[in-house]
Image 1 (cartoon, chains in turn green, purple, red):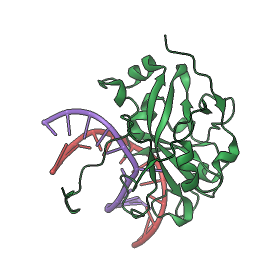
Image 2 (cartoon, rainbow, N blue to C red; image 1 turned 90 degrees about the horizontal axis):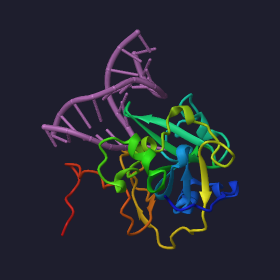
Image 3 (tube, rainbow, N blue to C red; image 1 turned 120 degrees about the vertical axis):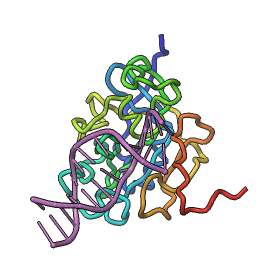
Amino acid sequence: MEPAIDAAPVARSLLEPHAAQVAPRLLNLLLAGADGRIGRIVEVEAYAGAEDPAAHSYRGATARNASMFGPAGHLYVYLSHGIHHCANVVCSGPGHGVLIRALRPLAGLTAMRAARPGCLRDLDLCRGPGRLARAMAIDRRHDGLDLLGDGPYRLLDDGTPPPTDPETTPRIGISRGTEKQWRWSVPDEPCRSRQPRRSRSSPPCSA
DNA sequence: TTGAGGATTCTC
DNA sequence: AGAATCCTCAAA
C-alpha cells in the first residue's frame, strides 16, 4: 500500500501573474489524476505570451492555444511532434503558462506503469513532459480543464515548500527565446528530465 | 491549399 | 543520428 497523502487545493492567486514568477512556485506541489495517480512537480518551464517568441501564444490566441488565454489554474494541453502530449498550468498573465516537465511519482504507480509499457524504472515514469502526460493519462481532451476545482486532475499542496535554491537553466527544445533562464528544477532530484542531446553547432562542454 | 516546422521520445 | 507521426499556422 502507498501511504495516504494529505494535501490541500492550491490558491488561484499563486498563479498570478507572470509565468516566470509562478513557475518556481510550482516546484514541490503535487499533480493528482485518475486512478490515484499523484506526482510531485520537480521540473517546470515558463512561457510568457506576447513577450516570449518561444511560446505557442506569442502571436496571439488560436484554436490550439485558446486555453492559455483563459482562466489561471486551467490546463493547456498540446500535441507535440504528432506523438506526445504536454501539460501546462495556465497563469493569469495573458497567454502565460507553465509547462510541467517532470514529476516524481508518489502514488498510483501501478496505473502509471501500465500507461508506460517498456518503462523500466519508476524513476523514468514521469521524467519528461511527454512521458508524464502519458503516465498521468493526460491528453488533448483535458485541455482547458480546471486544476483547482473538483475535476479529475488537481494541483495540490501537501505542505512541502518550493526549494529555496532551485536550479535555473535555459529552456529545452526551443529555437527562439533561448537566452531566457526560464527552466527551474528541484536540485538533486533524480526524476528531472535528461539534458537535450548536444547539438552539432554548439560548442562542447569544456572540461 | 500547401508545406515547413515543431515546448519529444525511442531505437539504432 | 534518425525515425515516428500529425497537427498547426502562415503564406500563397
